[in-house]
Length: 139
Image (cartoon, rainbow, N blue to C red; front, side, top):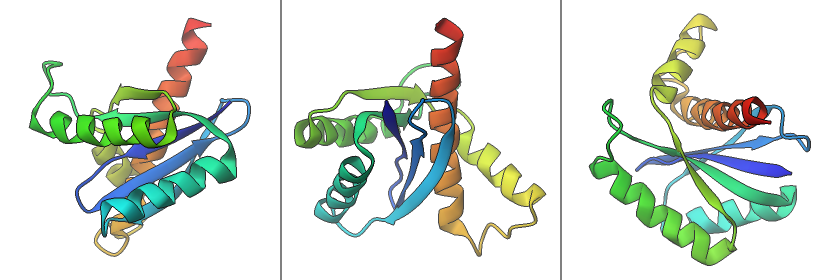
């Protein structure tokens, strides 16, 4: 089953995809946000190209586990995804995914300011990998 991972942001959307066996996530792309139609058209092209059956989206919970203001924006985005693509959308705690992605880039000597979008697709990959690892633990 192919699963699409999304790191939703106001300026960019990071996208990742898993392999056919659902074992590993790979960073796929960054969507530079221009308008909603473009965002969903691009996501739709990934869904079609990869035969996606499920979407996992980073959900920005607070440290105490409660939903914050940003969760409302993600929920609105999720409603649109569900309406447009009729796929299940899983909310997955994205705690520290962007910070971890930035740390990976630092360790690889990639300048974060120079590669702003890269961090978003790495974060999407980390969100998706966290979900995949959880699935394999419960099997």
